[in-house]
Length: 239
Image 1 (cartoon, rainbow, N blue to C red):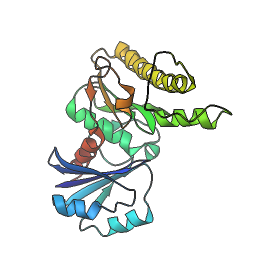
Image 2 (cartoon, rainbow, N blue to C red):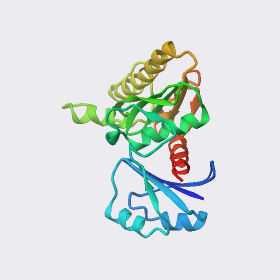
Image 3 (cartoon, one colour):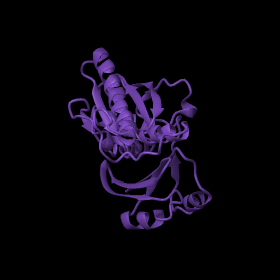
Image 4 (cartoon, rainbow, N blue to C red):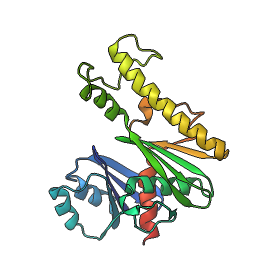
């Protein structure tokens, strides 16, 4: 059984895989306080760690106490794809893992992975298995917070609520401006890449994907577990 640790900017997630099959997963704090119980419950024998937020002192201690070696995922870890990113040492491991996970589901395809998390990332893998790179854009909550913090009078608005095409008060004007703006941005990327690659496979993932309510016509695949699937594949690749 494989242990997958995915530490993001806002939360940490633990996954247990039996071969390629996801059998269990939980969310926990950055201190990984529930990790040892999770390992005992699922009988994990090896693992991989990906983090975009670094490790707390408590997390480091718990990892050192593991009964098996943990593979630390970096932008230079061997993977089933070729990486053409000019600075692989600065490449987010979650972005690379998502590409690897998508390729496992759509081999020999041109793939665009869109991850709607703290940031919105766009990453492209060609049909020859070559990762060409990607773009990073502010995420949903980041945009809402910036409008409040970078102006004198605009309020902090929650992402939940009415999203009319045109706002009828300040709150809906901000929420609709941000959410509709992100929808148009994402559809713009999809449209541009589909012009170049008509058979493009598009994957949409991330915690804010559901809030954007993207149409099924635009996004072929929606998979909230594409990153851990990719990390599990990378762990097996480095076995």
